[in-house]
Image (cartoon, rainbow, N blue to C red; front, top):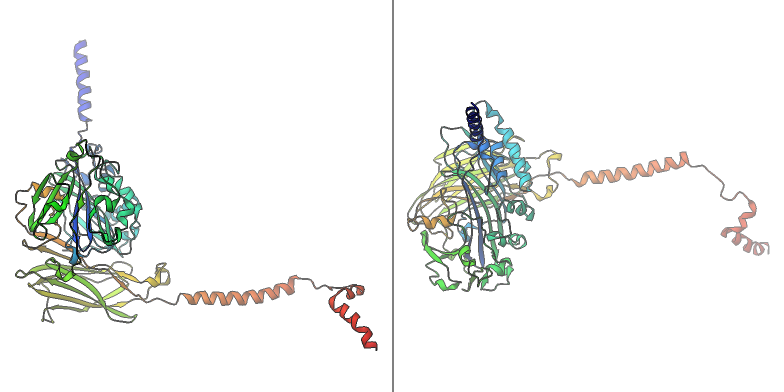
Length: 587
C-alpha cells in the first residue's frame, strides 16, 4: 500500500514537471564585417549581426506562450515587442546622409535618408480595430528602445499603407492571419551616438569582443554616410533578427587623401578577441569584396585570406575567419590593409547599375510647385518593370490631373497600373503608385504639380523658416541577372553575405529584387511673418510701460518740497552762484 501511494505521488510529480517544462528553442548567432573600396576614395564598412531562433509555433508573435520566454542569444526585448503588439515583421532604419547609388552601386540593404519604419501587424477578426492603437504603441516603444524621436510616425498624417512597393520579406503566412502594412518616414530625423548605444547592447558580446570591438561611434558617425538598421522577420528556420550598421568613410578627409588604408587607420580600433558566442557555421568573419576584372591581383590586400570565393557579377570575396586567425598566439589582433592606390574617376566613367533614379524640384513662388522624378534604364537589351511610390505630405496638396509620364520621345505615355489616394488635411498624406515598363536605354520622366497650403500658426515647427521636407521616391524593380553590381544585394532568403559562399550556384547570377531611394527635397513652404507679433508686442509693451508708469507716479508718489528751509538755499549750486553775483548786481 505504501509503495502504491509513493508511485502515485512520484507519477503526479513527474507529470507536473513535464507539463511545466520549458523547452528552450535552438538559437544561433553570427557576425560579419564586409569591407569594400567603392572608388574615388570611399571605403565601405558593413557590420552585420544575425540572430536566428528555431520556433515550432510559427504564430508565436501573436500568441506569446511560456515556451518562448527563455532566451540565450536572441534579444528578448525584440521578441516581447513583436508579441505584445502583434507585429510579425518590422524594419527600422536611421540614416544620416544620402546613399549615392549612381556612384556606389546598390546597397546590400536599402535605406532612405532620415528615419523609416515599416511593419506588418496582425488584424484577426474582431481585433482589426486595434491595428491603429497597436501601431501607435509600437512606434512609441521603438522610439524609447532605440532613443529615436520618431513618435510623429504614430499619427495617421505621416503613416500610410502602400499597395505594391513593400511586400513581406519574411516567410509568407497565408491562411494564418490577415496582416496590415504601415509605413512612415521622417526625413529630418537626426542620427547620433545615442542611437548606436542601445543598438549595440543587443549584441551578445557587446563591444568587448568580436566585430563589435570596431564599433567606434566617433569615427563611424563622422562619415559621409552611416545607417543604423534593425530587421526582424520570420524565416523557414523560425525567426531572424539582423542588426546592421553601414558606413561610408571618405578617406580624403579621414586620412588626408592617403592611398593606403586599413581598418585601424580609419576606425582606430582592431579586433583582438573573438566573440565566443558566435555559434553559427559562419561564426565571426571579416570579409573583403573586390572586383576581379579591374584588380585581379589578390596580393593588394594584406594579410592573405584563409579562403576566397568567386561570387556573381564579377565579385570576389576574401574570407578572414577571425576565430581561427586569433587562435594563433603570435597575433594579438587582426587588421586588414589595402595597399593599392586609387585615382579619381568621373562618375560617368564608373560602371553604373542598370537603373538610376533622381528627383528634383521645379517651379517658383510660394503658392505652387512641382516635382520631377527621372528614371533611366541603362541596360542594353532588357526592359525593366519599375514600381514608383510617391508620398506627399498633406501640407502640399498634390494635383493629380497634372501628372505626366514622358517615356523617351513619347510625351503622353500611360502607366500599366495606377494606385492613387488623395490626402486629407491633418489625417493622411497623398499616395501615388505607378507600374511602368521602361525599355532598354530609355529614360522615364514622371512629373506633377502641387499647391502649398498655409497651415495654422501652431502647426509650424520651431524652425519654420527651414522649410518642409518631401520624402524620397521609392523605386522598386527586379534587376536583370547579368547586371553589374558593386555590392551583392542580398536575396530575401539570405541573411548574410557569408551565406552566399555556401550556395553552390553562387557564381550563377540570379534576378534579385532591388529597392532604391532618391534624394529628399526641401520645399520652401508659405509662412506668415513671425516677426510681426514680436514687433507688435514690443510696441504695445512700450506704450503701456510709459503710460502706466506716468499714471503710477501721479497716483502713488507724494509731492514734497525739496528744500523747505530757506537757509539751505545757499547750499545749492544755484544759491552759491547768486551769492557770488549779488555784489556785482548792487554796483
